Length: 223
Ligand SMILES: Cc1cc2nc3c(=O)[nH]c(=O)nc-3n(C[C@H](O)[C@H](O)[C@H](O)COP(=O)(O)OP(=O)(O)OC[C@H]3O[C@@H](n4cnc5c(N)ncnc54)[C@H](O)[C@@H]3O)c2cc1C
Image (cartoon, rainbow, N blue to C red; front, side, top):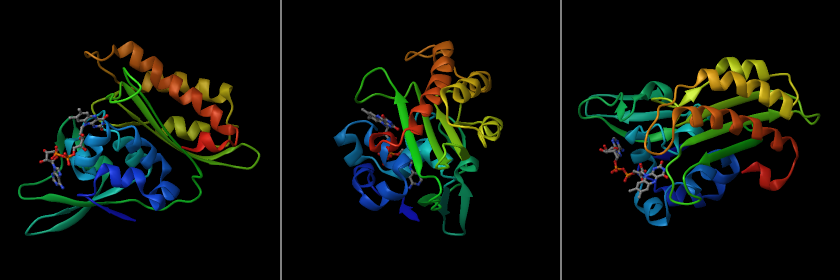
């Protein structure tokens, strides 16, 4: 599915089809900035800012989105992880613009979750964020999982080894806490005015541990 780069964040947050297909993305956009910021800001602008704290980025990494780029001489598509090179740095070439973002539909990931920890409940830049997609069997076994953290490295951090270790395990607090210890070693946060690196490392693991709450099939656990 294609979302055009100029689509406002408030339109994404309120779109019923996107909320059904990609609740991890709409959930992230609903906690991005404030209503005026979401009315003015676009998904293309949020991606091209390439901030490690950008709220659309962890969901788009987990969803394995691709960006569509266009210039007078060429059209191309790049996986988002290849598009973003570092804070404020992208693969945009001279004269190139982003025209849209393609997101593959993957209905097997029926548990989707985004959580952001900031300094306040609203209008807060992420100190740590986590996007998670889980394919959970009726018996509570993790058939597949994708995880992406924001604000704990120069770009969005994924942890394929942690995901591999969780496949086939039950979604329990014990399994997630074990994986959380690995995550705290894998992330590379910095100290800045919002939080220290040690705090960020701890919270990156805690957000993973909290995913065990999604084992309970409550509607409010699906956002
Ligand atoms: C008070 C405040 C609070 C904020 N809170 C949050 C927050 O909680 N979470 C969060 O993620 N962000 C937050 N932001 C950041 C900001 O709202 C977003 O990054 C916004 O999505 C930017 O969108 P824009 O369309 O205004 O982009 P612009 O600011 O116009 O552009 C950003 C950059 O991307 C480039 N660009 C934009 N569109 C394209 C395109 N189609 N092709 C190529 N290059 C392009 C521009 O040239 C520029 O370099 C906040 C900003 C403010 C001012």
